[in-house]
Length: 110
Image (cartoon, rainbow, N blue to C red; front, top):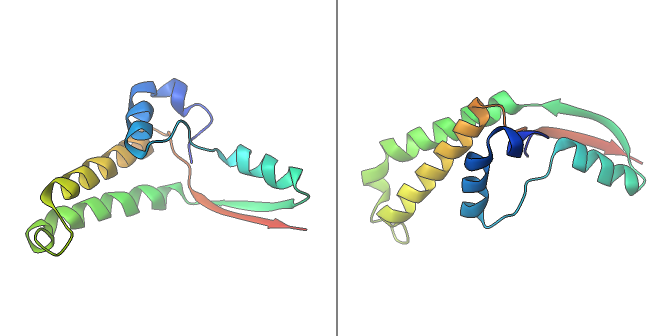
């Protein structure tokens, strides 16, 4: 999810990420809270785990880089695809470092 100001704060970075994913926008925590409320759900809380998001995407990129030789050549894994994946993960880490992404767990009830 994007922070409410992500596209204003880092327009080029966010545009690059959206183009890569063929998206126009990312939802925010507020978007999900409003949409669930509109459908009759009560917001019981949001666990903010954005620091885990950054760690996960960073480690995933590191592992892909470390295991590149092992992965390239496995059926269906091409070097170019691996490079794109690693570049994309790097953009998400950059967005996390710049405070442009949110991640966590919602809890809603009726």
